[in-house]
Length: 329
Image (cartoon, rainbow, N blue to C red; front, top):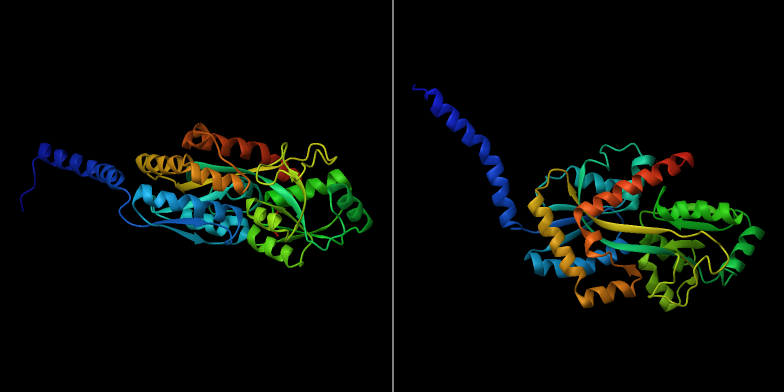
């Protein structure tokens, strides 16, 4: 058997080392060549799920491939996020995520991944505020009446949320502290099921994300107040909590798309461009605004800005969550 000369061997070895990098470049240039799976870590029908179905409708055309939304609910988003963590970093499995799944959960759960370093932020696509809504039979029509009723009926009411440590859960804790009221916490596998139970009268209160707006407009639930510093264009008749006498009660959330760590930058750039082009479409913007969604600026949508937002939220909220003693149940 003949062995190559040393110089020839080194040349061959160097060429072999370049092949994987070259292959990744070619892959990124041709991407996508097959359907993309977008894992939504909550039940179907929630705010993130609703918004992403509108966004991916347009992204399919821009990318030339089907985007399959896969709802993998449970553990306040951790099961679906874990599915993204285990996926190949090739751009064909992406994760939808928000403040809970890609920030707060790292302080609440013992996770097999690190929310700070095991994912690549792709694009921020929405900012939204919560609307405090009640079942129709609840004997209160505004925030003042609700607080009075809760004080007269301690621990009688139930608040449905999208999970332990979710922003609606924290909003409920803060609300009780500010108002001197007490009520029960009922965690669900997403905001969609919680809103359905509210409509059915099974629970009393929900801090609803954009998915609750149609129920408000249809009169299926009773709108109490917006947990924002300004009224929402989608439901301009609902006063803010501050207008209603509860100063300092404002909660915003965000949602975006993530990829597994190591996904090529060119693929992330192509996906980010598709999201940005979609959010610039007037008909898409109108549909999202009607849902109560605030569309981030182009600068905020960029991967680098999104990563900075995620980092800032972790640094802000982890100490608060740990001080409140919130842990997985």
